[in-house]
Structures are given as structure tokens and as C-alpha cells.
Amino acid sequence: MSDRQDETEGFEQEPESVSAKDAENGFFGGYENSAGQNPNPRPRDVTYAEQNAPVREPPKEGMATASLVLGIASLVTLCCCSVIFVIPIVCAVLSLIFAGIYAKNPGDGKGKITAGRICSIIALVLAAILIFLLIITPVILRSVNFAQYLQEWAENDPEDCTARYDSNGRMIEFIYDNGTGTYVYFELDPETGGITGYSLNDKASVFGD
Image (tube, rainbow, N blue to C red; front, side, top):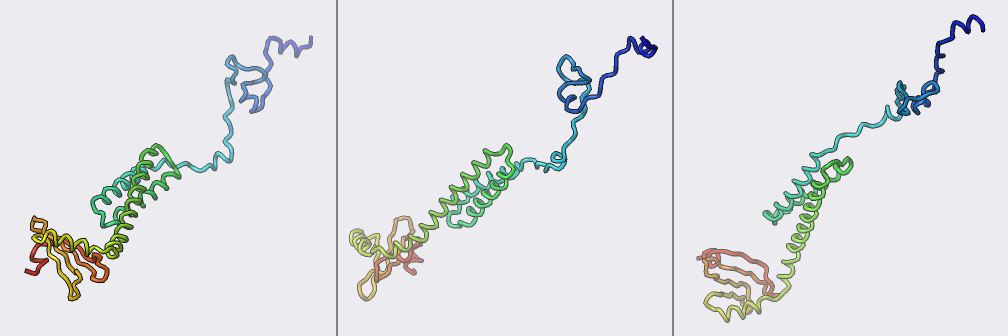
């Protein structure tokens, strides 16, 4: 045995260097620990894609809340101010817009978004129906001949009903006293017999007293 062998006898040889892949798999210098992991793992290098990955913004919970509040507001304003359709329509449209913005980056507000959308859609549908009725009702009232029906009513209840006619004997006005001091007034088209005007007034406003 040579002198160099004598000097190194009794000492363990230094383990060979290992690759990063072997270190990740639990191998270190030809052996692994009892848990099958590298006791001194090398930190994994961060890839270029991870360094440049876009930062995900936190969920816009405020958008979900705004969508719900505006959806409810659209229904409430439609019931309270049915003639002023601008307010509920604007609330419903804004609610749907906020819901769309939130959907691009959703979070835990899905329930609010769903409720807001349902309220907004219902409000828009009801508003469309009411607008249609407001447009079509005058057309129906003008085209249907109510003069004959009102004439029979005036004949059967002469104490409470007053009818006025033009020079050709066609009814142009019909007034009904409902017993509460308020008079129901109808203005009729003498050509078609349809109703062209309707109002609730006191006696002085109707009869000019």
C-alpha cells in the first residue's frame, strides 16, 4: 500500500456533485435521506414566464354590491315611479354593466351578481310592457266606440251621469259623479265614439261653476 493510500485511509470520500434535477428528486451525492428528500435542496430557479406573469387583481367585490343595489333600486323605482321610466331603466342598465365588469374578474360575490341581474332583467321587462301599454292604450281607446255604452249608462243613471252632444247629436263629453265630490270626465271623438281624454276633477273644473 502506498503512502498516499495510508494518508487517506479511514476517511470517507467526498460525494460527487449532483445535478439540480437529482437534488429535486431527493438524491444527493448518490444517496438520499430517510424521507426520500434531499436534506439540502437547491432553490428552484424562477422561470422567465413566472417572472413576467401578469398580477391578478383582487376580486372587485364593490362591483357585485353595486350591481345588487342598483338591481333592487330599478324594481323599487319602477313600482314607485312607474311613469318616470328613465330612473329604473338607468339603474337596471348600470346594474348589468357592473355585473359584466365583475364577471371578468369574479370572486365571492356570485350570489349578489345573480340577484342583481335577475332584478335588473325583471325591471327592464316590466318597463317595456308598461311603455307598450302606454303607447297602445290610447290607440285602443280612440278606435273603440264607447259612446254607445256611455249613452246607455247615462239613460239608466241620469242622476249621476251627464252627457253632452254636438249639433249632430253625437256624444262629445260624459261626466259621472262618483259620490265623493270627484267627477269622472271623458272626452269623446264624435266621429269614432272613442275616448280621447280622461280626467278626475271637482265639480267646478268639470262644469265651469
